[in-house]
Length: 600
Image 1 (tube, rainbow, N blue to C red):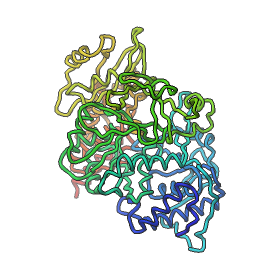
Image 2: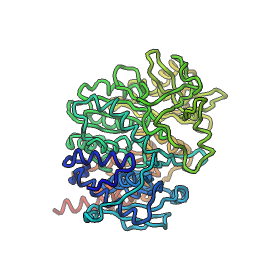
Image 3: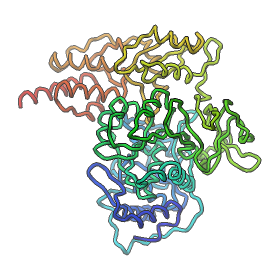
Image 4: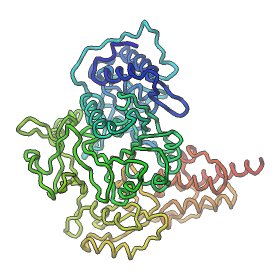
């Protein structure tokens, strides 16, 4: 293989890994796998295609692909060129079942980041983009040896990626992370987690979408000989199927979020089994109940990783044990400060204030947002850059950090200041509650709670429990039982959608019963019951009802369709039913399938 693709820090690190582990499996997708030598060849070929398209040092390469071998190769090729990759496809910005992404928002992102080219594995048009496109596919990336001599100049610390996050002004903003910061993440995870394992080159999932920065903590495994196993999109939101995949694929390291972990725990993660051995959880706070569930699993270790996109994924690490949730201690090369970066060395136990981060992980800033960068990134008297996380944290007596919510999740209720996370934490302490989300609507608090499978929700008892912990004005005026909480593409609770759904409940629901559909009465009845079980109470359906607009989400529709499969014994075309989530269409599809099954 070429020795000329290693001039950049990350390009050099990957080629060194390919030299050390040429025959080891680097990437596994479904039934296909590629060795490090094969991936290195594909990276070189893609590198050349990009250079022929005019990509130069410091350019930005749009990635119009979901998690796939081609997408991973594209990331590695971008790094070898000293270019930054930018996840831009709807599937990676908004993955799962609802892949719609506003084209106006996407167009603003293209205009903002101005990629030199967009790298894709399809010949379909890319909405919002009329610039150059480089198309790659695994079968076409075979280059003659005479062309494997692409040379680039040595540069110090080029950007590695730009990942978009939501912006307070309504326009998305891109966080710029350098290659040296990615190398720091690799070293910090190795020294804090992997170096303590007997088998450091582990089979690791690529579970997070590329538009969610925890994917980076798994991609860096390719710099150390790990096998990266891509988790199929169809199982990511289904606890039972995901758990079966992890076990059948012999996954040793799972990257995940608390919301996804709850699905896995409910599906039987705590039962005896060898896989996964290690769980890296991040993206949101671990509540006490989930923490204790994970701490009680002797056959596996769970690490709670805290971080923000602006500080290269992870900043602290805690091994989940005991009963007190914590984000642990800073990773090597990271400094934390509560309240005032100038006095970081004087943080006191019990002090609670905004958390600031400094060190090798801190981002370059926000792309094309100098004023916002200046607001959130501050330089102290010694020249160190600090990032204001907006998270409220405190330090325990034994030197561990705890997170207590967001500074921007504060509301006023009857002139009293209320931290919504505090109400959620109290609800999560109740033995019947699996998870909870609290929002403020029209000056009132509304709690959405998911109860344990074996528990019946007792609203009176919950109010009594709340009043034993918080003042009356912090007790939600409304407590609603829901089957699951809606999640954002990054696996976090979607508070915006909860608020919109709650406000929409004041609008009368359609009153037309689902009659007159083309389908048998038994099929209509079966689907009506399935929809009613999955959707909010008192939702009246009609033939044109849309599952998602009626309050459903990606988790509940998968659960509903899986239940239908169990009841009917018929395999349903999940993708088609999700793409067209209309009641009447579901009736017709199910009726046809049941009739064809009967005829056979």
